[in-house]
Length: 262
Ligand code: SAH
Image (tube, rainbow, N blue to C red; front, side, top):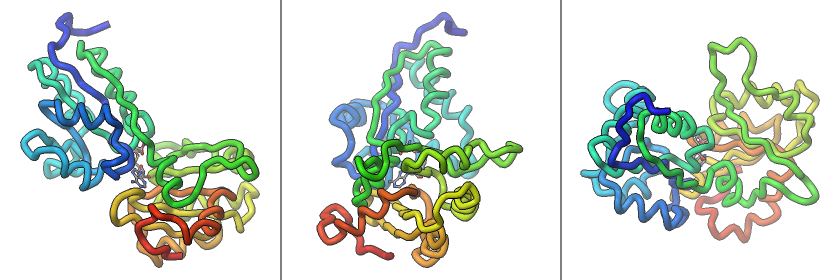
């Protein structure tokens, strides 16, 4: 299925970095980062993990790198070229490479261009962000399902890519990634869909980073809480009764490195 009959001598590892704490890298990810000739990354793995990688091996292909937006096409071609030069490439992505990370697109591109690859899963921020803030994404009494959704609407789409009405009806936990800016829109959509305005909501900013910040509220109050605390991406939004569990354990949250702002 390759366009090019040549199979590259090099190899690309699609590596998940986990949410940012270097101790949450997998053993395999750590080994690959050490062994790779080149690490292609964006900013999402965070300063602690990026700081472990020697400067000379690092190439920032993040959206804001290289002066202007780096295109996905550039990243695809760079990975492919390096592999055809015989290099071992770590394509390092925040969290898990296949959770809103375009890892799926990159994998297919590599396959089509004759590049051997391997997927190295990572701990996704969608679970770990809430987790370190004392929020279990499922709970026997409160949530028997969890949905991971993007809060970043494609403006060219006429209809929302996410069916908020259907999500409200699940009764399970909703975890929104890339959802800081559009928080007012989807909290409104959920209330319009009949969800209780008092439903607990938490925002976990830079989960597991040394400057992690968490704010809590409800569907009604979380936008104000976001603005007061100045929450910025990267942050996950957790919507559902599980978000209230945090209050029950706050005094004992060893890994919650910041004082609660709520
Ligand atoms: N593949 C990543 C997600 C990429 S989309 C993963 O599995 O975690 C980018 C979004 O991920 C951010 O907008 C934010 O919602 C979330 N995110 C990534 N790292 C985060 C962290 N340490 N804390 C909170 N949210 C994070």
